[in-house]
Length: 150
Length: 290
Image (cartoon, rainbow over all chains, first blue to last red; front, side, top):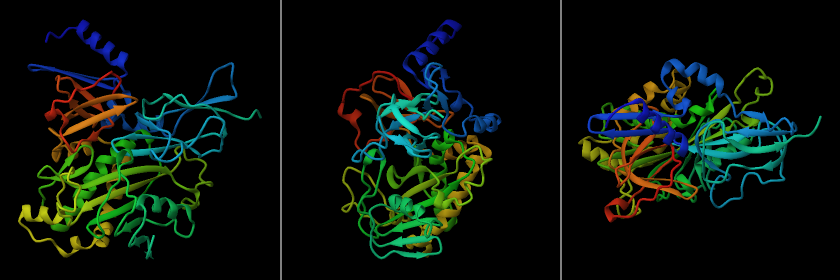
């Protein structure tokens, strides 16, 4: 395999297009690994302290300038999103539900660790963009809440 | 549940639905929120990945949930608790025996011997209930909400092949000792003692993830990694990749090589007890995997 900038750029494009976090290509004695997720790459010791501060909790952001009473809850991590704790129980939330701070909005699984994601705000669920069983990355919107106008 | 025996922070049941579920219930009750270990002789609804059931005849296995507090812990590091738990379980066994055992890891944290499963671990990370964190409200300065890890551990102590699910290649701790040519020490005949001995390394390994990061953790895990060659499936929203483990990325993600030779890296995959590639099944892929 010939290594040149154009080939590497092409591989980066593949990573971005398919939403991959890592891509490894091996041919003869050459191996190229592209790691798209900063969080994974940051797991070398020197980057860990800042990383902890950046992702201490699920992020909540205003949904848009036009809808300031809407908050989107972002995924704090990469993994598979589940709306229920097991396949045979109801989802943790549904559109229209009013939830309080701390109410679980979903579960994200990675490496057999199931992390329950709590809501950081109270409000009414107006949208659940993340589908059950969907792969999500850090920063993806999981749920949109409408908060009470104060 | 029957015959609960709570003393200090260990709650032992002769029969219960799931030690994971019972740990949640105990944490939610102020009277029992100090729980650290939930132990069962038999589970009626033991849990595995993707809703799978973990079944074992009474007293054939160590079935426990360890409750580990994770103050100031980043959720984005939660996946690596999986490696930490596997390392802690192996460390507990080897410390009791006082020598290395012929046990390795199958990604992410199965303990295996001679390519057969000895132990499985599943972790649930939940916000610590207020009942279990009475000072939580007063500590408004804390940036990260406190989380609690419920570490479900199942170790096959003496399950025989005839008792076992024939599709799962399992091995008991008793057989591991036979392979190693050593006599099992008394501590390893007592699930209660094993669970108690497991709590300390589990807390220590998880605290180590928080304090020092994961590069050291991954290096130590790699030394006992025996995942290569096992069949795995990664699946999400209709996208399925089936292949054989061919390595672990620098960040600890599993690398799967398909029958076509493509290598994909994923944070979420299930080991397949049977080997679909040997049956020449079609490999399906439509992009977007981790």
